[in-house]
Image (tube, rainbow, N blue to C red):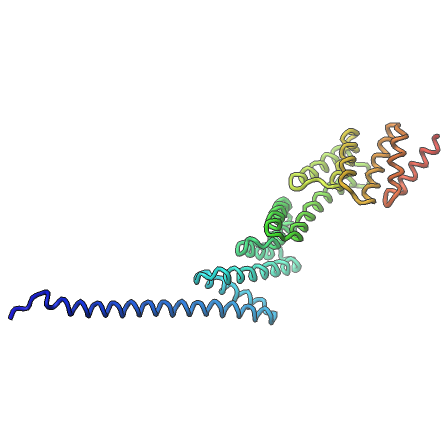
Length: 294
């Protein structure tokens, strides 16, 4: 009896089809089980991080949340990955502050940078990075970090952190300018005034002038004998709504300048508005001097 090829192929094909179907089902089941196991793993790590943090074990919380963020990203759970990364970056910030308090400024910089790399929208780590750079003597890099802090803070609506960064920039340059102008307690030299103006111009490259920086610009130009620039910056400072004490200092500066120019009427007008706070004693003395000459 002759057996044809077609008579054998039908049963074999059926057996092969069943085997392939079972293989596909087995592989699919195995993959699903593995994914389900991964899902449970990153969720366990995430919850373990929460429990560790509640127990004030930040080291364990950091480890668990870092692991949860990685596994959740692999599993495609963007929400858990984001939350875990956010918690870790907060711990990076705390670790950085602790390192600064211990004067480990390189370690602090490393912690803040890790936080930035992990979660770029957390503004506080940029602020911390600026503080660490300032402590390391890298002032210009610190100022750039503070500018970046302001940009991120404004983008994510963290106004408090953005304001702290702005304050840090202002305080740095105002300190440099004021200490240069008041060095040795004597009237500033023209070269000291130029140096102070340089610091204030660096401030203006990063932020708008405020009443304080405009006042110091006026003081610097007074030292240089440039009355036109003095008047311009002093008037701008008054328009910037300074505090009453600061306004008195600005009026005192203008009053002295006009007195030196022999413009008694204008001098008296400004000195009368300078009789407050730190400017009061000097303003009253000059007003008495004017009264004694008339």
